[in-house]
Length: 555
Image 1 (tube, rainbow, N blue to C red):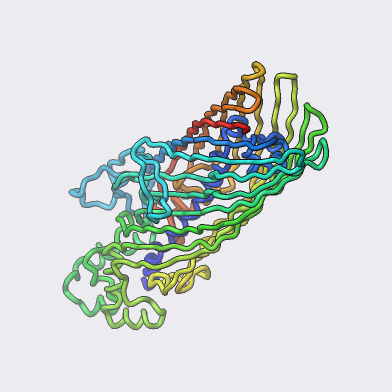
Image 2: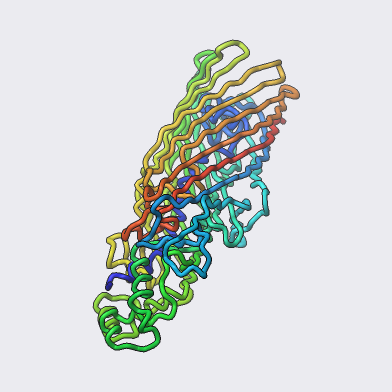
């Protein structure tokens, strides 16, 4: 029984597991940059759209003449369904009366659930954004989309081979929230992930009639914010519940010296541990105002019917900084207090360097080294017929850079003092989470049909391969393997003015059977970081709908 404190540090562990879900959102990259690209399945490396070439391939800026501006507005709506079901034989150390999935009322004095609810849903209710000035997550309201306006400007002097440009755009904007009591709140009641490029000085240079090169420097703002409830249906907490209900019950309130000696004061707590109870809540936000990166591109156009393009988007190394706040529940506080209330417990705590108590609230500053992965893409444009063009791209993103996240705190955390005894990834003031993500290749294809000299119709498709290992899947921003469909129409008012309308639809379904993910539903003693749905079958169904308008003109 002396190992029971290992469960307390899970509170800190949620911080890391929650923030690791930026990986899911990374699989939403390029969704909110440019509407014409969205309609073509993002297969535009050899056919970049106007000033958005700053992101997709800066070499294509060389094709822009004179002074041009580009303004667009994008609306994104997230629909996230998450279902939880108790499979046959469901239990955590023999207990199955999880109120999340069990209909038995409190009058049922049994640890075995006799009436399961079936499938329980915890759907997203709100779109959410992290507001830098307020340094907090703000819910936009039910069924409200996230807006992502962007703009760009370019200039090519008369007779010059160089075009200069800059753009404001959002490579990543995603966020959601839910009401109190939502079953999914144990993996994020509010989540916001943002990367906004607010300045991107760029150039494209026309080497000769067929070859152009270009580069851009992106100056971006990065933010990650999370609010979540905590619970830990772990086998060891099941053991503690059994000890409290079976062994300690006859001695509660009697101050029995024998039980104090044998059980290290565990029976002195008034509220026993329960693997299904809420253990607290966590709020955390981290940001960096300036996160630089660069893009390098090349565009080769040997004929009017064919072109080839390549782009390299560099990694961005950051030192994210922010604050955390942890509200600890009564049960873990009383458990540690009970340990220190007995003579044998105090001796054990001194030998192992365990904390003297767990406070109601733990707060302070937190920082982490974070790397936005590098990305490479190559593609072709080919006119199958004079009026029908096909684009095809292949890309690679270095998600293997996220092998581990390490969080560093500005002070000793009482619960980490316990965790360090059990893991080489933990110290008094730091904690690491092994993620083991994998680099992924993906492709996209798009078609553009010139119905008239003024009207163009577009469609695209991009299947998105997941970089998340099967044993790390979870329900926070659940975009795993996904499919992106795009449709659009472009209309040219005159030789200097274009208008694009586009709609995109991304869907991702995932099935996480019980006991298959160590960041969602793994049972056992070693699920010490984040498994709030241990032993449950999980299914997710995520839909992202994007709608927007783009206006481009030359002055």
